Structure formats: C-alpha cells, structure tokens
Length: 309
Image (cartoon, rainbow, N blue to C red; front, side):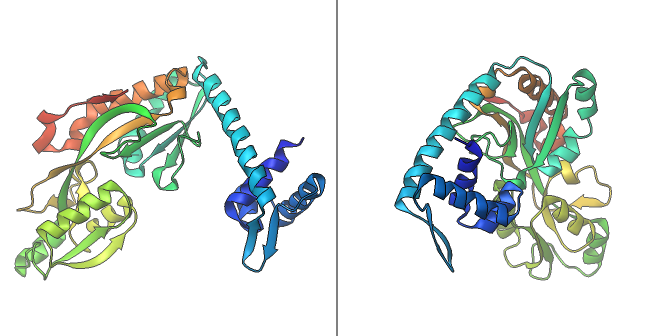
C-alpha cells in the first residue's frame, strides 16, 4: 500500500477538482490525474464520475474516503500523543497570531526567546490564514475572542480596549469646518471581516455615528490603521495600535470600551510538550508586562487573567 495514493485521493475528495487538489498538494494537475487513474486501476473500481461540472464521488469512493479519514485520524492521534511527550527544547513551533499583535508585542521581543532557546524555530502565521489547531495545522493559537474553542486549552492573556481615533490633521480640519464625528457630514472607515474585533468595531460605529458616511472599508487592521493615519476618516482601533502614535488622537465624546480578550490556546495533546510550554510562558510574560498597552488608560486597574482548563 502506498499511503501517498490515499493522500492524493483524500485531497481530491475534499476539493472535488484535480486542479484544486494539485494546488493544495503542490504538484502538477497531470500528476494528480495520473495518480488517481493508477489508484482506481489498482482498486478495480471508479472512485469518481467525471463531468463538465467536475468530479463526483461514487458510492465506492465514499466508502474508501470514510476508511481513509478514520486511519488518518488515528495516525494524527498517535502523532499528537507522541508530540505531547516530546521534552526536547528543539524543533518547530507554529503560532497563529493576529499580525497587529505580532508586530506590536511579539516580534519586538522574540529575540530574547531565540537567544535562550536557539534550537527552537518559531513560525508566525497570520490569523487570516485560518489554520486548524485541532487538525494540528499549527501548535498555538493567539486570537481575540470571547468564545474560545472548547476543544482547546489555554488562558486569557488580556482584554483589548477599543477607541475611536482620527489623524491630528483631520481633527483640525473638521474642527475648523465644524464637522462633528458623530454626524452625517463625517467620513468613517469600517473594519469589515468576520472577526469578533470587526463586529465590535462596527457595532460601536453604529451606536456613536449611525448616520456617518463609510468612505473606506478594510479587511486588515494594519490597512485600517493606515487609512486613519492618512486622514481618510474616523475609525475604531485597538488602543495598542493607536494610543502611542503621535499622528493620531482620540475622538472626543466617544469613550473607549473593552473588546474581546486575547486568548492563547493549544491542542490538549501538546500541553506537556516542552518547547510549547516554554514558548507559552514567554508569551504570558510579555502580556503580563505590557497588558497596559492593550488596555489603555481607562481599564489598566481592572486587568485580570483567567485559565481555561
């Protein structure tokens, strides 16, 4: 048995397209077609029917994929069990993290971790790539959420304060023309993704400036920040991004609020893996020392951490 044949078959079954499967596997479409044809010849049954609309799995193919998925799950569980027993301070740690948190906190201090653990390689993966921790696409997930996955373990690092900001130039211009941020004459920028941070920001804008004109929508907090800095409009931003920026100022009359908390989570199988433990301790230390940057002035005294068993 060649397990690669089953891997090719499983990928085709999930994508329903030879071309899409080839992109996932990093090979040519012709290689995928050839492997599928050889696999079907060896099994003696068609696994897919072909049409202009793509591939449709046959009953025989559905039975094969069910068995393949079970074997893959069993292998993953074995790998996870062994990974959790790994006490080496070497190897790779894959961390899914919002880019703004990585840039504002982690990247600025990670050289200390590298010096202490030179044999550990850290891979930082932007959270918009939607890696699946349960499938072990990554080892650690750092995200802003009030609804952490019940299947993962970890702890809350810090709430994130959100406030309304604009550029200093825009504030002076609108002050001279008597344009008030909360009125229909003001331009706003909307952070528009499926994240909890985005939903909170949009809710705040509807509360405080329901009639305002949305001039720009962004799908990245870094783009959102830059749009505000370039005087394109008012916007709600995490305080850690905007508070220390001298080109920005708080919008008067709109109080800051506590948005979703930052959580650091991992797969239960990895809770005892030494390299994962030391990295999570390193991140906790950063957040403990610098949580005031996430909270802003109003909420610094109310900071608290909570564990998720």
